[in-house]
Length: 231
Image 1: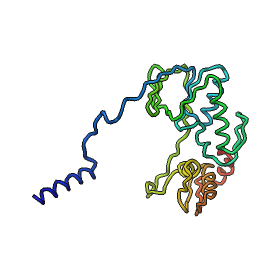
Image 2 (image 1 turned 180 degrees about the vertical axis):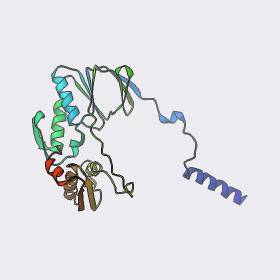
Image 3 (image 1 turned 90 degrees about the vertical axis):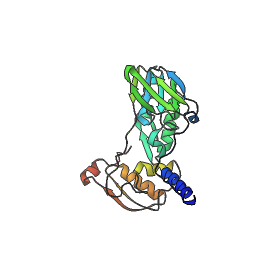
């Protein structure tokens, strides 16, 4: 009997380690999200610099604008930029995070602009319907016009060990430092093929991380031609 009991416990532990278990109670997930509907003149998916500029331009023409921000506040990647930036069309020149806050505040205050923070667009469907989701809410939006301004996504390089802890895209390291206040490590090697490589090196040094090497995959001519093009 003792061996049988021990075998039962071992089987339970093995099933749990293998990811085999019981389905949770469907009712334990809580109530379904509240359905919200909107029909703006313009829907802007993405609240970075481009999305904010599009929302501002549409609102100044008298359009009713719904602006979807995946993050908790508009501004996109500029929210964790610490270097001076210039946004000539917006008439703003300041440190990156200050410029993001200023532009977001100006656009959010415009008549006819509604900002939904923490609400990424999750699909564009037939008959001009867009869905967006945020905690406790599912938005069904039927705009007259759609602007997609969801920004760019880094493509990580593939190499042996690229999935190990401590290997991360530059944007992730910068978010850790400037949004979350966490240093990503003590020593780093930075590799890339855009001007954001050097912004990452600058931010790492600023945060007290020793940079052993910066590897730029571009030719010297390409580096010289694109210098200063990060913002």
